[in-house]
Length: 121
Image (cartoon, rainbow, N blue to C red):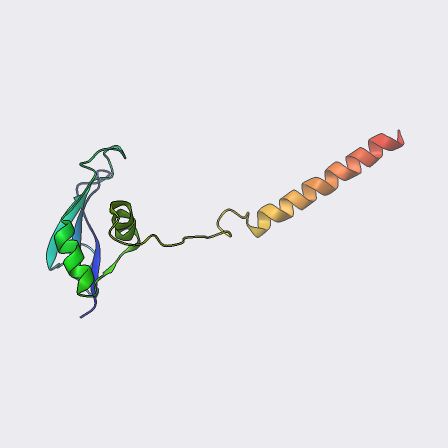
């Protein structure tokens, strides 16, 4: 059985609240889980202690059993110092798309033509 430590969404529309749960990876996001390990309330300020609450003993138990944390949960665990920090480099994310590059080239070409026309006069 492949175990995951992940978030299960609760709360009403536009008011998210998440439970950190240990669940079988085949179960739905908000479906059946084995154990509740903590909570996450994204509406609270980032420096609030109530924003992320985790039962570290149980989290460590499930990690020792081979449970894999989701991306967001692994960030919580990195902040708590339980898991080693992963390198997350995505240099292509900040790079503009192909259409934006084409527009920039056209704009540069028009600017060059305009400056040449002004130099000839």
